[in-house]
Image (cartoon, rainbow, N blue to C red):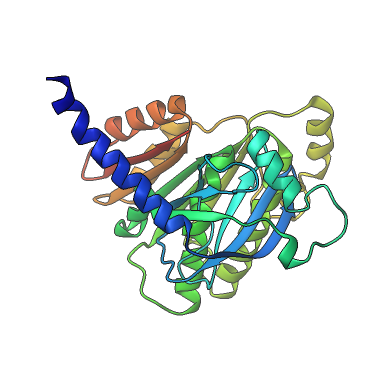
Length: 299
């Protein structure tokens, strides 16, 4: 009787592979390649009929590297943009090969026709899609886990520039990073948001807290000297970088006090240990009319 239990799943698997094969035949064009510090590769792409929502992800294949390997990457572009983009951290053989194929190890600019062909399957949904359903939102990213929130923050910026109504009235953004180099590619987006929000008298809309969880003693001494400067010496932002890890109990208590009776959406993209800690905080601080609703993506 084993075949009865095997045929169903095998049929679904074959259907999924056929759909992916069909999608992989649709033409994808790499329109721009950006090499960010700390070996992070940004690919801007276009595909006919491609539509996305904030926080979604795609599977990518590069046939010149491997005909069989598909890898998931979070979209960092906003739905309002005329392209979609991914940020790829170079941490393995496949990503290193893609980095090399895109000219990451060269000083000259490659012609568009020399760039590798890629196939894209998706987009697929995640918990971050629901971010605009809450009036108050907490976004927590750890390391490269900040990528889905790049899409969220870009979309917020576009909505306000286009003067579209946004149900979300307040965003608390937390980014925990182990090294200063990882801040560099994302700091440009935050600087742009900071400037635009100031110009529109909306400085209170976005509160962001950046935490450096590991640092060298010599580096810390140098940063302490510059701490009194107007802009942060690491990110160039008005908001100063903090050291260590957040006191989540205090953060949740403060937000609950400032937004009584609200539903607060808590969105995490990070490790399982952090997800467990935030899940417990959501439960313990859901009181007196303020409800914290936890949404997570683990890696």
